[in-house]
Length: 375
Image 1: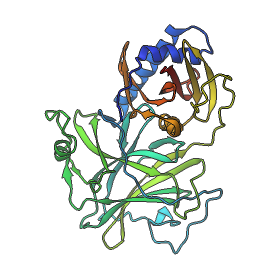
Image 2: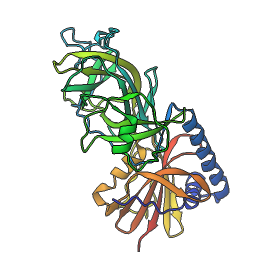
Image 3: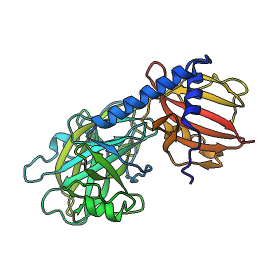
């Protein structure tokens, strides 16, 4: 797929300004608002434990059956630690089974980070999958293949969802990952010297490079955590859940644990149904609160308030059925700012659609659509 997003930032700013100002011609004010968001993004990047280096999004397909919960059941006292319906209070915490895992996520603006477990949030998700980042620097001693990293999703200390991926039998180093998996990175950049316990390399296991606050580069992996649960009855309902990490050795024994982090499943949002009569019917907008939708020259602009960190991906996914071409999600470069915005491009019959992660004037998360006619 093409990675070219060819709409300049100034055009986006103008269009977003028209969308969020309900048709008022306040382009400069909108440029300032977007510039302010860019500056906030830059500040947030500097404040995180580690921020993302260049690269497109990749994810590990993590297997997780599905469960819809209205009432959280009590833990099953017969369930083995680290399994469905068990209590997270039974996870091993023995000092001999040290598991050092950091989790993070890719946010709506494309910035990634990882953090030790200390109640750190892992984002808000509306598409059923959390785009996580995983860094493992220590596993319990004596782990042999086949071993697995298992992620547990829990509510009120009860495991309601599980997902796992095989662990590599032996550790590697950041330098080795950068040299063999991310060869396009600058080899002169200093790298983190901690061991790296990676997931088993596969087509759907993607290495990422993060810039650490100490000036070094870290190697992490992208993992798509299915926000569904372990008895096969449907997706998780809206709410905030704890995420724990553990390992399973070759004998099937759960060893070590780390957590919790918190992940949020976004509530359902209403379908946008108040569009102008002549808005292009092939362009379905993401569910949420419509801020504005109106003509912009020969094209259209629209803005919808919608909560997820995956809102650009969800919005693009709604156009897949009619899409002629979809760009990879990426950073949108253009004047007048050096800092990019995160977006994706989709071409549908008659229209080139750019979908950009944004914020409405009241600060709520949103997506801005810019539609340009192709004929």
